[in-house]
Amino acid sequence: MRMGTVIGNVWATRKEDGLTGLKLLFVQPIHPDGSSIHTPIIAADRIGAGIGDQVIITEGGSARFIMPDNPLPIDAVVIGIVDSTEIVHT
Image 1 (cartoon, rainbow, N blue to C red):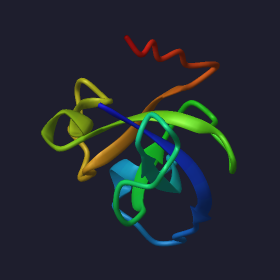
Image 2: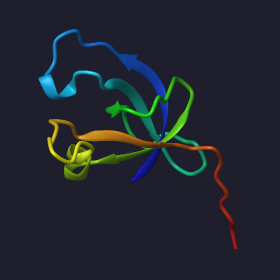
Image 3: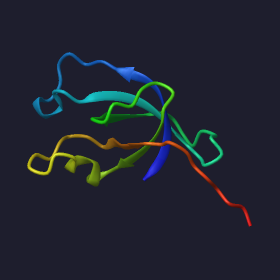
């Protein structure tokens, strides 16, 4: 899992049947200090994240199984919207 910031939306009027009803978002992965990690990715979203939200995303094979009975052709999915973070430096 990693954190990211939602920076935009992706609209696709034609897509795989299993993706119908899923919102697609541009997410910029970030370090704990908020700096960018690499280029933005597209992540599927079922929980209602919006532009400016910090989110938790998961990538790879595990992202395909957000629908237990129907693996989807996706590589990244939003699994949480971050309320706050705390990092303790010792």
